[in-house]
Length: 306
Image (cartoon, rainbow, N blue to C red; front, side, top):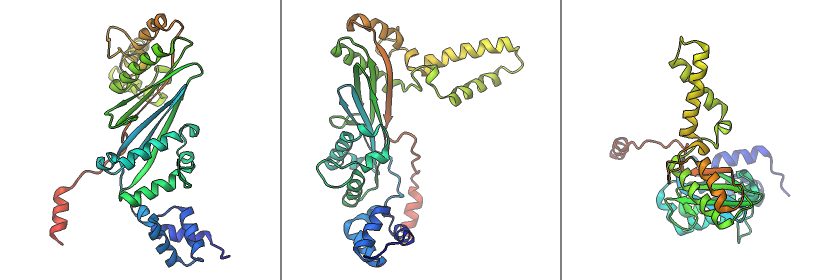
């Protein structure tokens, strides 16, 4: 049996853009002949997939799947919205969601999981889809919300099919109360999250660097004021910040006369038990991905040059 060196695998990977394990398998199948290995990868569609890996994929779908006391949200990207409307792509996102809960947000574990109904991994199936459809795709991120006793409500905004859309929200409510009533409340709060996009559950859950940046701006605006006055200004400003950006302190979009915390307290009467909002997560498709600006005039000029 031919010994395949790490350097040979690296060289093939750089030539084709294919995954490391795919390159090793190609070299093993071709007795270490790198040119034959390139052809082997091309025949499998893997080199073609690799050549697209540098292209930005900021479209696609967010998929959610609720399973009793837990639910998962996953974002799978494509290059164009056209592909996101493709039945094959939608089916892939749904099936990836079904194997994502045990990974608890670890994308590497999701990619290594067996793809439902096939003998390949999720990673291998995504590569096959890239080769078939002709666009770069990737499993970008995932998150799980779970409760011990209660419900996890889900909401999909800009829905294109069951459990698939542009924004996916999960809300976890811990309570021994009436489950249908809790789910309805959770769904309403999930809709609120999609509309208001809170930074954290409360001030304590907002990242420290975010709060420090806010405080620095306040201090800069109030230079020269006595320390005790500045302290009161900061405290007041933090309360205002919480009302604007912290879920429990935000005014409920369905009834702005109440905060989310007040809505939860009032819901205890209907649910018949204490209700605690313990976790939430929102995925907005393409959020944080820097998209390239189209240079139409440059493209036309390039085409004119032949």
